[in-house]
Image (cartoon, rainbow, N blue to C red; front, side, top):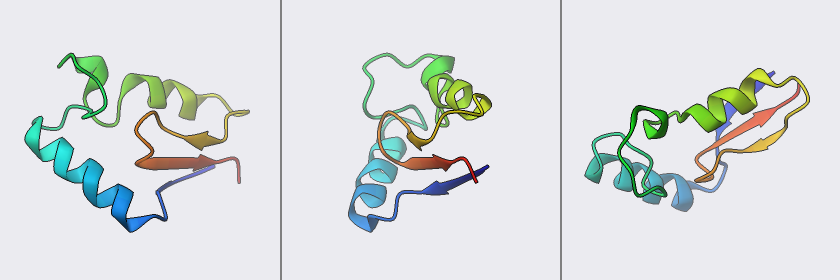
Length: 66
């Protein structure tokens, strides 16, 4: 298993800018809750699933099975 940043530098830059504006909370979500603090609970749960492969909700991170 490996988690990496999206290979698209423009997406990474936009999401990181949004994270700064929202104090580390996912810029794609309205509520500032602990579950939405980057790396969000949704993606942490997806990482824990050995069968999951794909991007997090905001496309910042990608998890591969390898």
